[in-house]
Length: 301
Image (cartoon, rainbow, N blue to C red; front, side):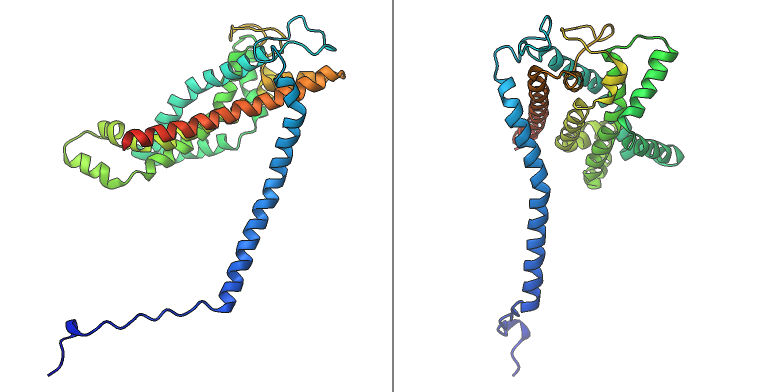
């Protein structure tokens, strides 16, 4: 009598050892990737070390973070970058207030509603903006906002140029995060009779929120270091100016450019100190993005 197949013992699965040739190829590929990473890391570490080495003296001086350069002679190393730091932050903040809602609504349209020619045209224009040089954005705002409409050069004009540079990053990152949300969640919500707009705002957006926040903060960090808009659209001021619609206003990139013309040692120290300050500000923005993602994930648990 034959033994039923279900009662027969299972034979041990034989695992063939990895051949010598495959192991050699794997080790070569791993070594190649490690070497490529090390080569890419060298210039990054080198630049960071040079900036820290030359700028650390300036940022630890009294008044660097709390004073402007008002009344400070070019050959005297005194004062600080309070006025430029304020200009950098306020220009990026105003640009974010405009770009984030526009980018979010555009991304929602492309990911949830977009179809046909309008969606393809919108996608094409976002791709064009993504490759737009900052000097072109600055010249466009200058010709429209200043030369045509007649408004004066101001920090607000700089923010408008930064909007053009920030918008495609916000749109692309938000759109990709929305598309990563499983379609089954949308269909389950529709099956319960929930309208599409409420499904997007109550289900899709909260799930995609961590990635959206990261993309938005990365866009803000990117525009903080743009130099062309501040060179074209606003003049440099050595004192603080809280009015973004009138008068000159300093920013960290503009301060660096201005102090490059100073042959004194004080100018050298201010240039590298401002560069290190800008790196610290961008690093803080990245840190805020990481902390925000952790907090959102912790609340979900």
